[in-house]
Image 1 (spheres, one colour):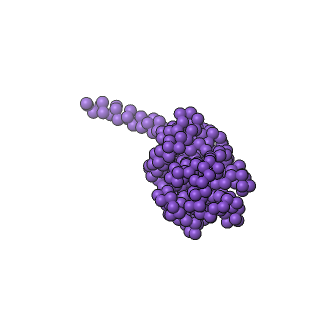
Image 2 (cartoon, one colour):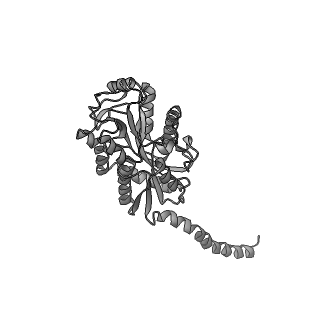
Image 3 (cartoon, one colour):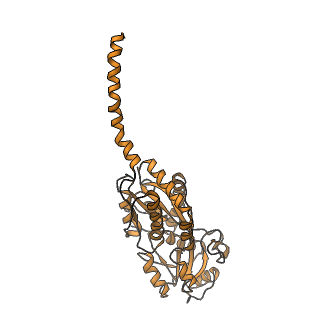
Length: 330
């Protein structure tokens, strides 16, 4: 190539550089600008339960950290499937998220009609909190501990009932695991939300419930409900005097409720990582930690990779329990 040719090509190449930069500018600006508008957090259960309470705590913390509005929207129904489906079907642009739990981890493995795939349709952000479930009974029930409850249930098969949100949610499966491990026949009564369940249990119309401590603990403190045990393998820091189910005669029993933050599959990884980082920072602040602990939860937080692995392991564990219990979600 002669000098004349080189002199001709070099300016032409330089002219192309602004064009190339302009082509990449919109994508870069979009990534840097996030969030450029309010975010939406879908809560798949009615107000008052653990999903609603912890979701709103997370939304407030993230709103302050990101400097943008986060609109928390309750979309209950179909054991959490309606709100969850709305979440995963939203554009994967980083502006829609939802609170997930055991119900979302197992739903599509128990039914093909829930509207989403438990293992394929999420970009997982982070755990928010884990919560020991309390094995609760109405004070009128003549039992003071787990052994007495098991004995009463075995003596009267099918006579006792437990409150459930149904659909393979954490409390539902925790009760079914308890039945499987104790050989008891306790009737499941399904409620649409924690509020209706609590009303009937406080009135004594339902005898038993496995319930996340969040939303129920103050009724135990007031003596309106009796906590026989906690569901985790170790005693809960918030309730050191309440024994575990395992140490109360059902050796090896372990179950915990949990809530995490997820987004539709396909959300850009930098957005997922940013949201996870900001949420984890918030969970470490005294104000957020103390509020969750006061309600009986344990602020957790982890990376997207860790939450994805946890979600998969919980899906596998509880699907086995659901299958053995013939849980039907159609």
